[in-house]
Image 1 (cartoon, helix red, strand yellow):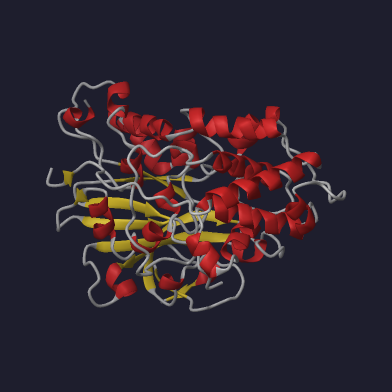
Image 2 (cartoon, chains in turn yellow, green):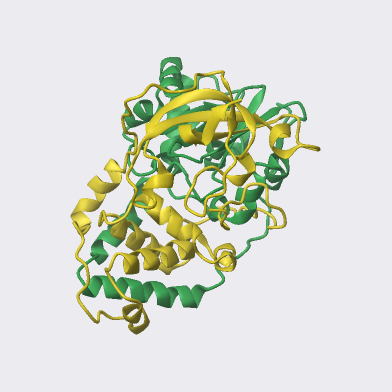
Length: 219
Length: 212
């Protein structure tokens, strides 16, 4: 989707403002937001792709004015409601009002180390060989789906070169919407700054994206 | 070295505009989930403790220091970063598929996630606020030199800049150039020169003098 999250190349968003000796958390609620988000992810009820899509589907004004833990929290509320674990009435009341869906697993303290160390690998085998080879010139497709995609707007319909074949991975454009993992080959594709930004681009700049095979065609 | 590396003398900006709202919102969420038996508050404490004390940029610094001192490890890191990093005990969430990219005298690498906040947690821990915020995500790809200047880093005009937009599940670790005058340093001494920002590309490794 052409949502507020697709930020590459936008102007007017202000200085980066790095903070000296930044703490891991700026408030206690951020710690709880992190822990609640990861705990609910461990239910196994949704994928990382569905959760990314829930975040980017926030209203643009909300998304752009929120801290990242706020974005996570708001998207988590959406996911929990969508999958029947709680209701808006319960969030408004601040208490349980009814029994909701039950997850496949509840993350207990003693499971945390193992779950975090395992992570969520998303490399999957595919039956076909890669369509593109290292050094091949490719063009990214031009499309504007209302659904989830990982091809940023700034890199659509641009010519680049395949720099690496990175393996085959779950295809987020399908997986975010419950259409299955449908793995594809992923390529690192590198573009000249001038191809992306045109006139006035930094002549020393190259940019790469990691692109699923269906994002690409021969140039 | 032609680059200058200033300190981070910037003002502290507050990014969290909804402190009390968010406090109440997260409290309600945690309470409802706990009453339903869907979360274990002790698990939340364990997650927070993990990222406050165990998983952070010192992990990545150890990887870089080892690569500086051990050419065979550096070669392995270049070829199969996930396995090389796992050999030091760093695995797991948001580090499942690692790639290491090496700065050279010709090229400086910079990592961003323009679409969300993808970051190599297993080696760098939780991302800083600025990495996840719109200014960095919008500008790193179109104005990397302007962004680097805000970190006090001015690269020579001839230096090539390669920006890696983490659009898939690969997570990038920048291996900065080894500073001069570090011959004979132990891995522990070398690791002290490796800052978090130098592994994102918004900084360089410290000189031995600057690290003191």
